[in-house]
Amino acid sequence: DTPKIPHHDEDNVRDSSGYAGDALKILEQLVIKFPLLNASLGRALGLLGANYKLAGSAVTAEGLFQSSLDKLDGTVLKASSPLSILDKCIILMRLGDLYMDWEKREKDAELLLSRADSLRSSELPRSWPVTELSRSWLTSNEVTSGLQIWSVQDVL
Image (cartoon, rainbow, N blue to C red):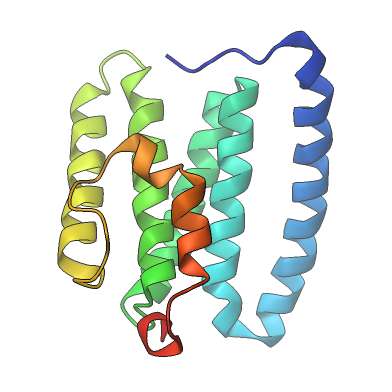
C-alpha cells in the first residue's frame, strides 16, 4: 500500500509538485534545443510521478511514469550509461509498485518488476555492488551518493 502523507507534509508535497512542474516546463524547452537531454527529461518525469504517487494521485503518477519510460526507452539503448539504466529500473519498479496497489494489475506489476530486474542484471556494470534488485536498494541514499564516485568511463 502507498504510505499516507502526514497532514503537516501535504503542503510540502504540493509545493514540491509545483516546483517540479515548473522545472519540467523549462526542461522541455531545453530538450527542443538539446535533444541529448531526453534522458534528463525522463528522470524528471519519473520524479514528478513519484511525487504524485506519494500525494495519492495514482492516475497522474501512472501517466508520468509511462511518459518517463517513453523518454528513457529512446535514450537507454543509445546512451546506455549506468545512470540512465538505473533511472529506467527505478521507474519500472515505481510503476510496478503502483500497479500492485490496483485491482487486477498484479500481473502487470510482476512483469514490470521482472523487467527492472532483467535490465539491472544484464545492463549495469559487473562492478555494481548489489547482486539483487530490491525496493530498499533503489531508494537508498547510498546508490545516489555511490554514483558520484564512479569513473567517467563507467558513466559514459
